[in-house]
Length: 321
Image 1 (spheres, rainbow, N blue to C red):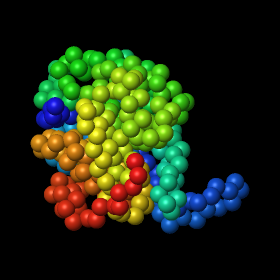
Image 2 (tube, rainbow, N blue to C red):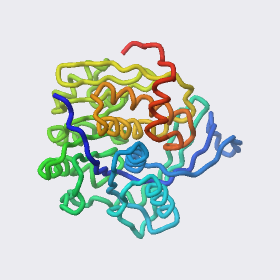
Image 3 (cartoon, one colour):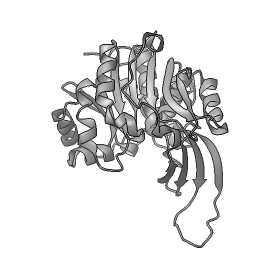
Image 4 (tube, rainbow, N blue to C red):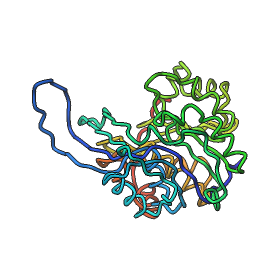
């Protein structure tokens, strides 16, 4: 069955101010590291995903929280410049979530985060009032594990979204405390589409191969699954169908935000009537553009440029899945 075309998406997720440092190959206490790049930009799973959606022409509305500080002003300004509806982003006396993103030359990252305002948002399951859901047809939870309150009642929040008439999705993120099943299993029965990367799926299921992971996730209650495989592309598990979509061949500089923008592009393609597999191909294109730049959203372009990239860029050699 085709996934319903999203008219507009309500995204719930963390919003961050990122400090980007590259390259750092080793940490040495008591010594200095000289780097080639030091910059600041917007980050956060909710903000990255909604930004990519809006840049690609999909109306996006964001739920989250930032501080009443200059960093909060800055990330909201960037979101608004892309067309994201931020009217329901709350302001806190706590500082805006701030993340130091340290990269090596291979594009691997380490995050040092001050959670700040993200500690406070969603103290109770969201009620999805009509003024917020007006015109919205889909609800997306971006990184359950980044928001301490949301992870406690993500299942109930998704249930309420379904009761409000919305289709739903989750992009899981990483559980630093390894409470994968405890957090995700209550949410899966109310999730129409699950996004996970390979490391997250392996940690959740304790399985080794993508097909084994997908089967185990379905045993936990998941239905349709998009499994992100990094340089090997992604696999779409759509009912009984399994389709591997190869990645595009690029040199990865910084993988920050690639998964978030992948999800944003995926829904932007569905919004334009593309089937799941073609949406996944265009999401791979967006992921490839993002990892080619420093910063979570620096590589995000508009719809026409994304189509041109997908049409003219080489596809990576198919790797084992």
